[in-house]
Length: 257
Image (cartoon, rainbow, N blue to C red; front, side):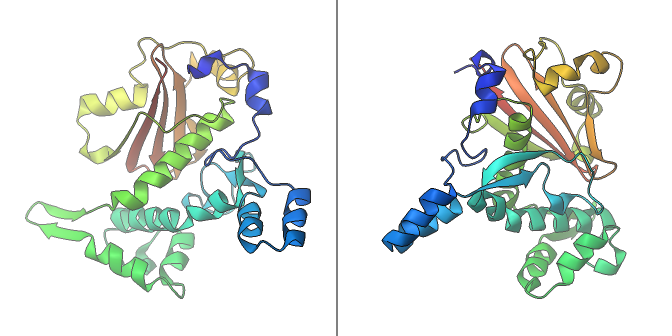
């Protein structure tokens, strides 16, 4: 279904988890299941307890966090379930940017602590093994199975924050280092290849920025040098573009046909 057919009121009324889609469990349901003594159902309900998830993930930002950092409704399971991939992405990018795995050279103190804390040995080993040196220079092999779910989560969060309903999975997700793009590819990514762009729905947050975007950059800078994103509505699709650490460029697309 075309997400633009949903009214803003319907979007705000949607009560399911932004990422998983299942309904939330309230205190009454959880307590009744506890009383029944069914451990499986009780634990499932606890995982469906409503929480607030930050968009983007806190692991990708430095402290102090922006005071206007968006949040979306999600279940406890999803709020905690992506942490491993988020830590991997944050640490990998810091290794890439610093040129090695020595945490004393990291610019981000938060990531340096992640890299050295107890229990992070497997993370350090996995990233160290991703390092490739050749005549062309240093390169890093990204574990897409770790990164792809994180990028999808980020994109879903931005879509939900812009007051669109929870959608099925994106039609496509692309992940590329900015430095590996050609000049044309970089320009099209930064500009959003804007032909066919539509005005978002009346009342949505995306529309509130349209008048400014006519004169300013359409990107929302969550934290300088750490994270920025752009949400666009086109005649055939929705697009969320993300840049993490001014290195990794990601785009998630939802077809509207």
